[in-house]
Image (cartoon, rainbow, N blue to C red; front, side, top):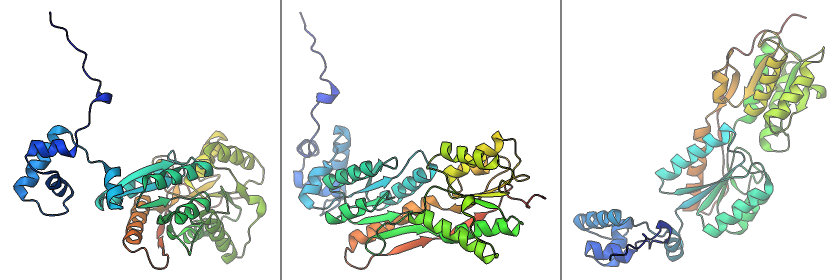
Length: 347
């Protein structure tokens, strides 16, 4: 009687080794290493035979072992604040494409705006011996921690360590000034600013741009029209409902990011107001939904894919040349005028 033995579970199957590849290809282990890494000579025919053997066996090089041996990692860490926000998802996509072009593997962490989660991600990247880290920082702690461990850092979108750490940002002040000036040119004077914070460089610079445009037109910031609207759609929505129900409501709103703009948009619709007949709306961040609604939303557009790619290029340059002064690159923005902004309604 034949007794069938159960198949070995995949999780317990032995992983093929470089020795297995060498035996199958009929070469030495050092030849396998040269053929698969491209470092050192291997004849084309031998290189192809080794690669075919590795593919047939399902051999995957041990990246950690290679890093420990060479003291050089080909992975980079990327820490973003909230992948539910399309801005951060696109930034990560841009970084991933640029990393792949340069032979890096990207390891992604999402902190959900938690400083504790940010530090945990940084600690994990130190343990993985990544070559460098790109971060949209929530605090100064992450760049300081990584710097203490000798890991190059590029702060992207906002900066806490300007002057000591490389950065890639956009023209926040210019974009906010142009958005506010656009509303002023349409005759609006009661322009509300919905903003999440003014302590980070992004929020601070967008507030400054808003203030500068008002001053240039002979006006000034009215504190009651500057709305600290939280970090999410729900908070912005509620604050917009409260403000737009008032008899002296603003005739226009500048939302300092795409999430806050969505909250304002929902509140305007809920109250039965017309855009732009009753309230004009302009946003910073040209999220995909803004060109899909009717009327489409006027927005300050930034090339988020390019932002992520530029951060990887900057990081690669720092890895290759670790000495030298820090560099901050500023990418341009442009105002996309659409149907959500119109002349100030008559009193």
